[in-house]
Amino acid sequence: MKINGSAALLLALLILLQGCGQRKETPVPLAEPVEESAANPEEGIIEELKLFSKAVSVIRYAYVEEKAPRELLYDAVRGMMSALDKYSMFIDPEMYESLKMSMKGEYIGIGISLQIIDRYPHVGKLQDGSPAQKAGLELGDRILRVDGISTEGLNVEEVSAKIRGEAGVPVVLSMLRPSLQKEWDVSLEREKIELVAIGDVRMVGRAIGYMRIDDFQDHTVEQFDKALKELHDRGMEALIIDLRGNDGGLMPKAVEMAQRFIPKDQKILTVESKVPEQRKEYFSTGEHLEGNYPMIIIVDKLSASAAEIFTAAVQDHNRAKVVGTKTYGKASVQSVIPFDDVSALKLTTARYVSPKGRILDQAGGLEPDYLVENLSPGEPNRDQQTLKAIELLKQYY
Image 1: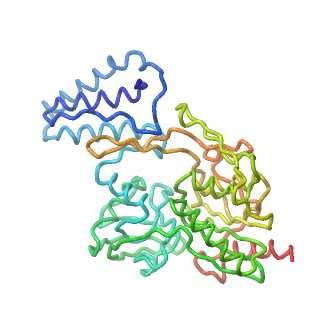
Image 2: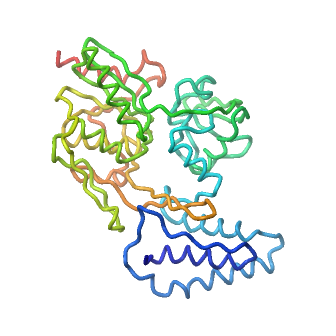
């Protein structure tokens, strides 16, 4: 397999540092779906690596403190990834294990997902019945420190790795509630968290069904179909889908769910990439197509990625109206590329384009059809966004 200059640089870094006293390892080829194109390595890449090689030699010879070769390697790759976009990053072995567990639908933690806003992690989602919810954390709360360590400038995976750990072992979070400028510490006991994609299913009016979708993971569409059947059985004639706080997940699941509402052969999504294997257009198969009943999607500034893909598809096809605030604006593909020391790269390799050609990450997110701010997030009786959705749907009866 031929690889491009960036991959050659990384492999060369591995080879250079293997000669610095660590055990020999053979670098693993880039994993699917990021098979590289047949382009030749960038001209002069090996020559340019001489600077790095010399810097390593000088550091190991003259630096006042001992630095392990692997530590130098990891820091070098982190620096290289930090020169890219904010979603590309180096994942050390501890973080990689945590990431793999969460994608399987369970992990040891406190039941929150995170979004980075203004260089700090914020609570983007709360798992029902989780330690975080029981302790009174709310959407939008800022995490200042984890066990006394500042979170400023850390990415989601780095903060998540600090919060997660062994079941029964507490973690102390230093929190700030921006709306009240209230700061406090809270000790939470970690436990096994099983992710539930569909967080709430109910009727909110005579014939209006409501469901909250928290994630797009392996079982999301299966749970979605089950929830739809439940609502149909209860007389649903209009639907509200709540994607607030939904930070995404698996793109194919968002596409599969969109097929329930978009007619056969209509475009759902385009994936643009330099990697030929990742370029693709997705069209509706027309299978499991729902009836053309009125539908509202509720979003907020934390709705991202797969949630934006689904919303953009139904909005572009005029299948649903969107209520809430502008979404997060993350519509790109991050491929995880593992290495045999159980570290990995998370690299942005493609971007998503909506049926009407909207590039969501460049536009800074999706604009709702009806801009509605919530007066008091977390209090259903003052949930202005849901009330607006109900008001819009009632005009059909």
